[in-house]
Length: 399
Image (cartoon, rainbow, N blue to C red; front, side):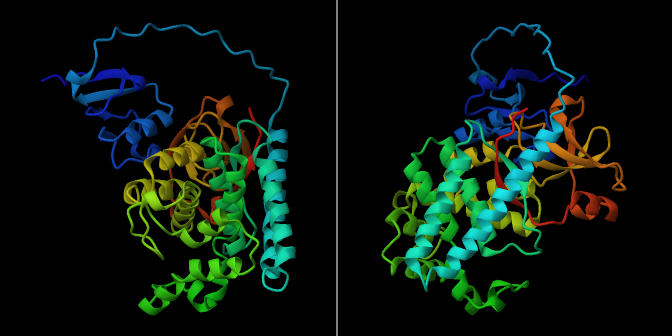
């Protein structure tokens, strides 16, 4: 018996109730499988965010309106100036982002060191750092994410704070929040884990599973941080709310107060989501796997709308993701682009030889699959620095 041909529809015609099949491999989307029953609007928005032009309908055909087949329209070929090599500009842009990131981490350390002995000085320097972050965010209308790092083996509290601030600020920017709200988010992100400095290092750096006593002590860090900052009398309430409630979830399962969605400020919800993603990222060392786990296991803990914005910001292949290309080279994603399926990458052969910086949007090459760190040769790990901790910063290079 011949296999029945599936109905193909534009993504714009998807409606709740349909069961659709995505024309992508499972490694290229955040769902459990390519067959998806559309039960929530966020599923439709996330599929639209994958930059697909069509999906296949498996069930629910009666929900579709009668629509004529779209005509094929021949588009004029884009004129490309072959004399311009954008790679040096992109590399320079990434170096600038790296410099901004390192300066932000160092400035944050200085602030943390002064918060008890010189709270007013710490507040002034924190406010200056926040203004720098805000300026970098708004340098263009379409900021992207780029991969950055400190060169250290472990992610410090301050490095984590900067990366959470960047993701949170991009979410706020996408949602058109006011600059005042963006500043609260930036300041709250910087300080959200300062209470961990009152937790013994043996607990903070423990590799194995924590005992109940250790876990309960660690869960006190939002309260510790709030007390440290609140007693200065200098910080705004919205920022203090972020520090105290950045582990609260909309389903009431968070801590320290088990708040539900209606009682958690939107600015705090944004930082909570960015923090959850960063924690998963450092646990799994794969930005794409972390995003998939967040969507599949924590969707009840965070707003569907915020998760969809996070997916849009990170893209299908967030910076730091290790991938295999259709030309069989392997690559590390370095920067997101307007085309979520064709980021800028650092590429090499399986052995680690022939490294090069590449714009996939300029090549007839796509990402074939995401690959795990353990599947790389030692040479490739060294060339791509594939086992380096991952953090993010703003980038405004557009090509």
